[in-house]
Amino acid sequence: MLAPVKRHPAEFVLEGNIPEKYLELLKNDFGKDFIIEEDDEDCGYELASRAGWYKEEKAKETPGGNMKFYRKLHGMTQPALTEKLGTTKQKISNMENGAFSF
Image 1 (cartoon, rainbow, N blue to C red):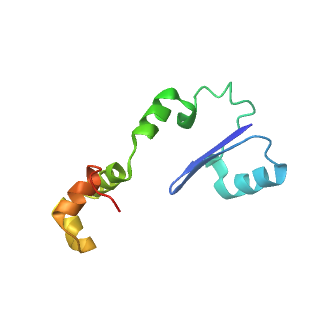
Image 2 (spheres, rainbow, N blue to C red):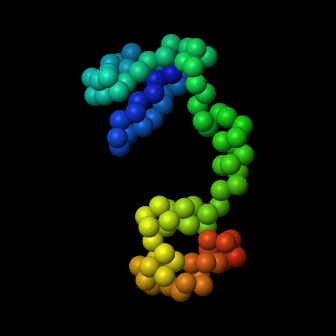
Image 3 (tube, rainbow, N blue to C red):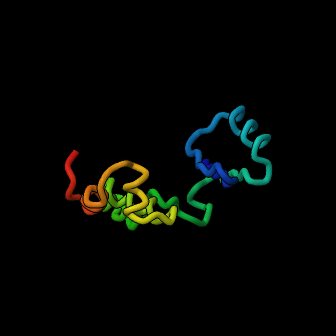
């Protein structure tokens, strides 16, 4: 059984033999945003976390790469981040490029 829920800010998937009492709680809380698929083979999609491309990309992730992603996502420059963190631009650059040891 697969039970995906998509509602901002919650998005999660429960898999396996889910007790009915939990399914009822989720139905009550999430209403139309709660979907039950009895067999994940027939749901018409594959969970990204199971896909080969996802596993390959996940393996490439680094803490510095994540920091750079979220810095850019929030529209911050390296100098702006250094000011917030009270460090130097060189340290931020080194962290993002994996040349920094803690």
